[in-house]
Image (cartoon, rainbow, N blue to C red; front, side, top):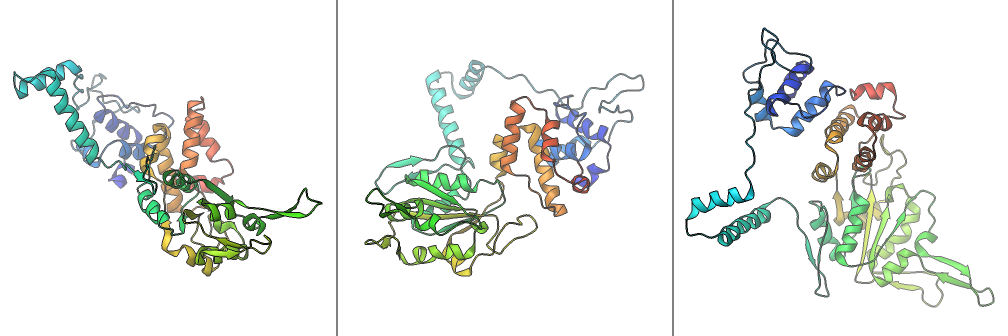
Length: 385
């Protein structure tokens, strides 16, 4: 159907919106180009609705704004019927009483309605997570929860090392925070780079107050490993593979040796320690989009093999959190970036930031211009903006 709509003029697309929306498009369509209008049409209405609107053909006389007029220039009303006005709560209750029984009182009616609402909520596709912690306490995860969350949490709770792989700005770091919160454990992370040294993981020897003698200062990794907590290797595929070899023994054997900590060199893994890592690739090295990635040693990847979880942009979350004026455009750009194999991303992070800018007073056109800063004219042409 999309191919058919692309053969139509912009006026015909606007006319379809008017037919499905009681005579008005419902938004300012003047600055929006036809491909984006079509994306917005599919986002708002089903294919059956669109097909129904165009099944009888298009009017002979159509203005550039998608308004049908007769031979005398008078606008023709839309084919769709206007939506009936909503009844008040009391009207709805009265109607329900009549359907049930003249002897049913208002309290009974409300009880029936609430029971049906609860059933609908229980049957809904919304993910609801309540975690029972080892100490017997429960924790309800607030906010949006990805469909993959339950699987990740289950693996983390039994000590599986987790590797989250997904595009930039899809929520990998936030997901690690949610795991820590759900388990009731502290959280720490390290941003991995090619210049990261082993001391960021093993800790440091620093001059102490006792005659300048060196003292050991623990790293977050060692502290979490010994005392329990969730530790995230963020951007793990950006680090030097040789540096990461330091943690291989720790993740495989339940303990490791730390020679710089004299007198207490054996470090034992706490039962509540969870190791997580986030990456844009599967550790196979740089690609066209993520040029700064490193190839990871297979022995390191093997430590995470049972906990690899592939993520993508969460459209359910985006639909709830991103401004409608930006959502259809963002999804269309993302699709065309993929189809054109461009080394660009349209991330959830950008769409959320763009929504903040829109609320702060920036126009949609200004936000779009910001997104395309640094793009070549050929790249912009490929996404048909």
